[in-house]
Image (cartoon, rainbow, N blue to C red; front, side, top):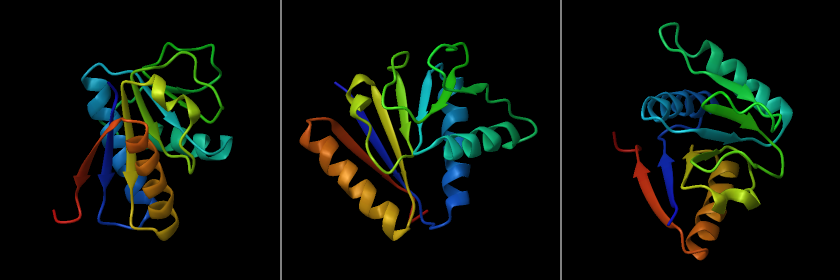
Length: 143
């Protein structure tokens, strides 16, 4: 059965969300996971792509933008309605939970203290729980 992890940050800054995303991707790739990062648009996908390339000088996070053909990198960033080549770890940064999320073994959502994002991710949480997926909360607001 799939599991969903909600990482709640004590920050409302979009940059904090990107930084946490990069650390999560770095850790997951070291553990051998294949990751699909789902975004709202090609513009957001490009922003994530640029950020991961410049994340840390000493870090290398091999990834590519999705074209649903090149699946050689452990991390793919996309925004399409389908995701045929991935089923390991979905990191959802989109405002909607993609219909294909149930195909993944793990789902990750990164929550920041922004009213719009909080509203969207509360909806994702209800949907995931309603579908019978185990949802785990990792609350970093107190640390």
